[in-house]
Length: 277
Image (cartoon, rainbow, N blue to C red; front, top):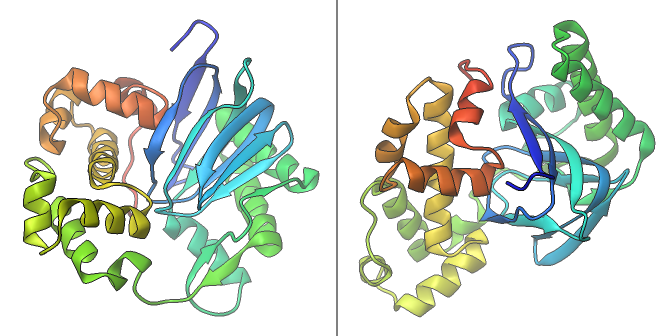
């Protein structure tokens, strides 16, 4: 991270299931990856660009970016000076609990619009984020739920229940299962393709079309998700590296910082508590 860049990642017991980030990035580039939960980002200054759902989005000061769970995206500076932002990463359970009080129908809440500009909603989210930063538990819990109620009421819909899109292709479904099962000792792409009775190039194309990521990037996403859970539980980073399949702690550090925006040790210092995920 350059001298111009800074990032703070933290969690608070007042908001179980929500990770928070405040950062400025200039040269940092997030690789294609996905999160288990939502990404709600408020741009404070500069411009960020990210690829998501087949389009490249540019977000600038005052904009709000809303990314759904398990949706692949990347991120990098859209101008030479980079960008600064505040981000909330709420779990599916956190958002669903609020939605169940406010929305009719069944299914996981989702945000069809990716980038919006609505100052009142952004102001609510920013106040909630700032309250969490200063450790005001009552204000942060109240304001965050109020802000998400406004966000859901204005922008969310229900995603129909049923199998996710990657389960529509049996070969991709089985390939995903194998990667989940062999997190520490993954197969080569040739072995993975043989296991699902496809050619390697055909599998890469089908897998990326279904998940938004090629198999190797999907595996790294799985490893980072698992690493975050272990770090939150207090597992030492050196042990986490081996437990999720990285060759050593330096390998974990490199991939974790690129994907999450802070090193594993800094993420772990943000606080530990048990969530429902």
